[in-house]
Image (cartoon, rainbow, N blue to C red; front, side):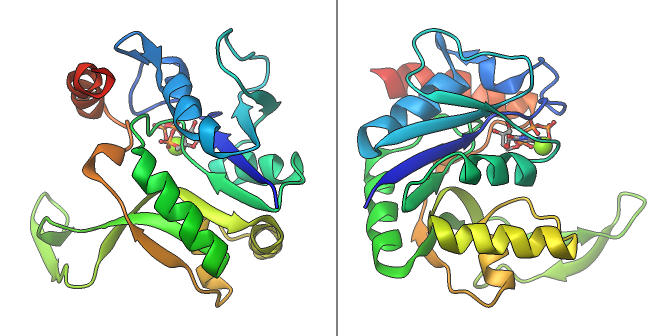
Length: 215
Ligand code: CTP
Ligand code: MG
């Protein structure tokens, strides 16, 4: 079967505050260019969702479509823009994707039909009780933080998206949509370098990592 990489890159980057986040550069390459380059060798096509009115800069080997209001909308549009049997969905905002993780994810999705990269939580967790105070403690036992890429048989994820849209259910990732339908999602161990560039602190980390990564 065929495999497509689907890259939602249509967000506005509000928390980072530097304009359209996918085009922010770390070490001379944009977040988007890095995410596309990491996946391109392993798939038959790369599709990117961009904000309306924007075009792919030269040098990015992909096909662009217009994204939606939310990440979920952007992914749904990407799913309808390909006929690939298998899709790997990856945030443009996660520029450092190790090849061994892509390979492990492809293996898992071939076996199970739905898999995501995720990392066991290392920090102590707590609910904010309001007023800046410690609220209810949360055990981190058995908790994993979900990353991307996530891999699916496309038909399976299309159905999960249609159901979520019909229910008015909003989610921040795609594996969660499979799980809420009772589907199984295989967890594949991720990597600290797969962090999402969300805040200025994350960008500082990415800028520090880029020269090491590129060496
Ligand atoms: N995304 C998208 N379409 C949207 C919203 C988000 O394709 N309508 C993409 C982003 O471009 C990003 C990924 O989903 O690659 C993860 O989203 P996030 O980190 O939240 O990025 P932004 O939405 O751009 O940032 P913010 O929430 O701070 O505005
Ligand atoms: Mg967002």
